[in-house]
Amino acid sequence: MTARIIDGKAVAEALRAGLAARIARLNFRPGLRVVRVGDDPASGVYVRNKDRAAAAAGFDSATIQLPAETRESDLLMLIADLNIDPAVDGILVQLPLPPQIRPDMVIAAIDPEKDVDGFHPVNAGRLATQQPGLVPCTPKGVMHLLRAAGTALAGARAVVLGRSQIVGRPMLQLLLAADCTVTVVHSRTRDLPAECRRAEILVAAVGRAELVRGDWIAAGATIIDVGINRDAAGKLVGDVAFAEALPHAGAITPVPGGVGPMTIACLLENTLEAALARRG
Ligand code: GUN
Image (cartoon, rainbow, N blue to C red):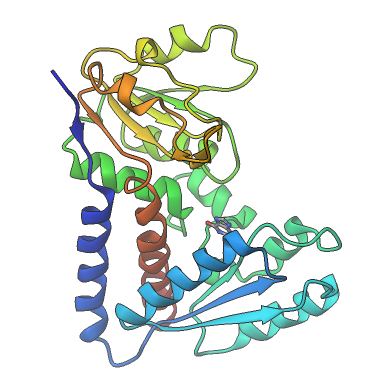
């Protein structure tokens, strides 16, 4: 038996096509502004991909590029302008930021109704208290993939590996809302392999190349690999040793081509949701 591959590229394309069809019926174009401070080359590729996908789906999308030495106060003033700009439905400030700028201050300055990253404490609080709000893109993409893979969620034992603000914690909330029995494990967990072996659904989001070995995986489990790492040879790999996992798992996402493409699609989905909530 070998695992079914969950094709994130195809699921993301279908999601983006659905968004484009909905936008074509609107009498306005949802507006997205991506703010980039400095020129970290990795985030350059990411920002260009966002722009391309947004334009193709019919969004009014633009990237605002600021110099690396931008002062925090100047960035906060730009955000204040975007908050009141009626053409702007979604604001995303690309992370990481240069050291003179405090990310928490910047995230808190974004209008929660335009916070398409779902990072604002108001949106984190809404998610934790089961109120409607903007949900972080990567965990939202993971839920789309689980549903596309046909994985039964209610009552399933789900293990989230990693407790980050961006993935692990919101992932816990979303799986719990879908009636999974959720365990969050992390670097200080006593016996990681044993905890992972209990998982019918395993979401790996720790950023450690191929940490999860084949014998950590229960027969037939659904494996969602959020990690994007380089191995010693410079090859792009996930948090799961993919080849080892194949004979154990029931279904698994590849890296690349799994969770990655979903993040941008969900950013666009959040931007459309924000636009509809704001403009009715
Ligand atoms: N940098 C890498 N991924 C992300 C993301 O999802 N949002 C933001 N704002 N910055 C990022």
